[in-house]
Length: 227
Image 1 (spheres, rainbow, N blue to C red):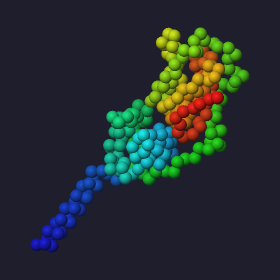
Image 2: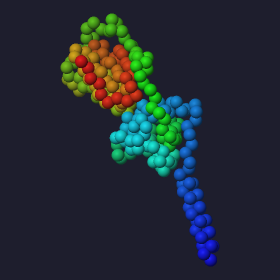
Image 3: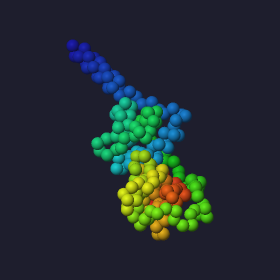
Image 4: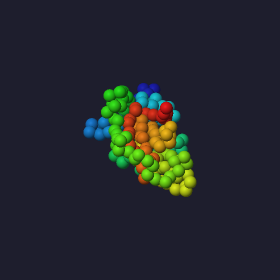
């Protein structure tokens, strides 16, 4: 009788284990052709809050021991719709395929952070309008001493608002989740930097605010200062 009971207990334990395994399917990896793009999304969009090694910062720890408990379906919902704790929704930023891939990616062992050194920094520097080709005088009638630079966080843009008329003067495509806008000493330029490390220089002497140069200073950033 004792032997039968023991075997029954073992069988029940095995069935319970199988049921748990079925409840949260084993994670599958990101397809090789999508891996580089998925890594880029993580390090540009996610690492700033969750950490480059996914150990957590302002966001939760996303190491496999935690993410695998949630499973693919729940992770996709969290990425798509955000959380009450402050995580933004990405359903209108990432495609469904990208959301699926990033959910798979964070269930895998974290990758070593990509290097972003002086070579990468210099290669990212782009001058859209050379200094000699920029306006020699202000081409608009905006009071530049009363302009507000407002972050349109999830769209990766800033809106320059005329403080006198309270109207949007122009919307400029910038880095993701701009954290800081800084005015140059001359009052002509605005420096804006996103959480992805992309720094843009906006010239306000054009008829509409125009990006004249850009550089990516790193994989993550919070602020920029000028002298």
